[in-house]
Figure 1: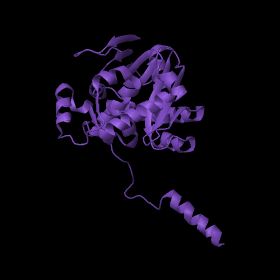
Figure 2: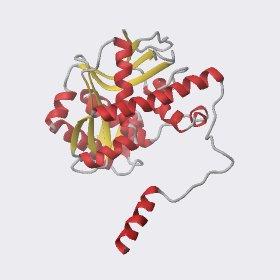
Figure 3: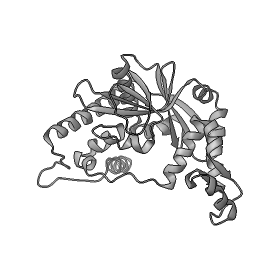
Figure 4: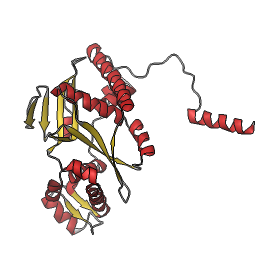
Length: 286
């Protein structure tokens, strides 16, 4: 596998690990599929083919700031301005700061406290700190052809260490195991874990030493947990991404991107949890 620094106009010759590829370039790379795109395919091919272009939002900029603070603290210190006492972007202090830095990198008031608080909490967690201070590369983009379909796939590691460990940062509302396990399912983190591990093996012929999630809560005190998914979760993730990846390959070959498939009409009822609640209430009455 070749490792190369990103440069404008470069070509990807898989398997290839590209360092410092801008995030927008990575997400727009043509004729390739990522985990987030497979999520759309799983909903329906039409939702992927007719997706709206990604547009940067302030929440996305704050997310980038968090990643920089946690993964590249020295660069965060150099590139970002924290105006903890500034609440109004019309202030002279804010206007002065944006003359020397992009507005995306000037954090005011609660934004600065939020990002700094998450940074401090993560680095106060022994296991997370040990993971993030290992030698390796951050925001590393890996491209390789799927050996089954030939499709070009891509993944972007938050942190890939020299010893072959991968770590992914996740903001969450609640990092406790019984709650975060729901987030794993709802957001497809099991699919990501399986996909990233397999893509790494396709590209290198080696197995990742581990793929771990560093979960940090958004609200104070920004509690942190580090998780490794079990074999059952990985197996289900692998089944789900393979189904979506094969469907994508079929659509590329046929040129057809169908939406939902159904009969003339579909029978629909109440959500399963409502039905269970009704059944439980009936049992109590009996």
